[in-house]
Image 1 (cartoon, one colour):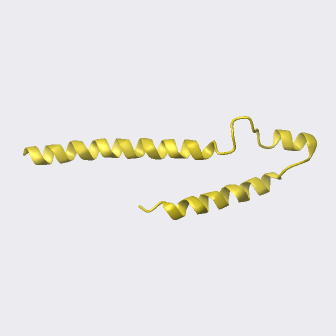
Image 2 (cartoon, rainbow, N blue to C red):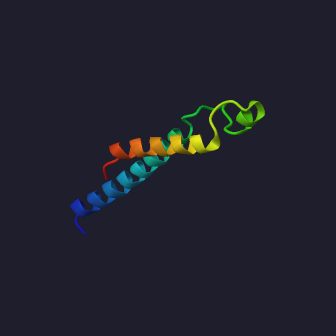
Image 3 (cartoon, rainbow, N blue to C red):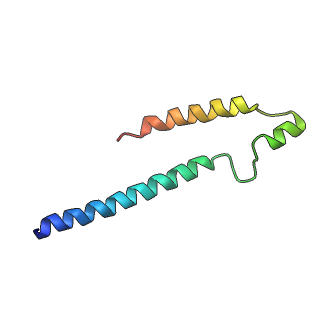
Length: 73
């Protein structure tokens, strides 16, 4: 095995790990978009104000569709 193939193999492994970690980090950040203090459902049920759970799902679907536009693999 020559040096060029070994370097390519190492670079591919490093890039794969970096990309997978960054994708995981991006999904974690996207899941926290609502904020840390908000507990969906509990506060809304207590005072009957705010969006219903079905509206939250629709909003999450809309955000996902918008995010897919920018993900070109």
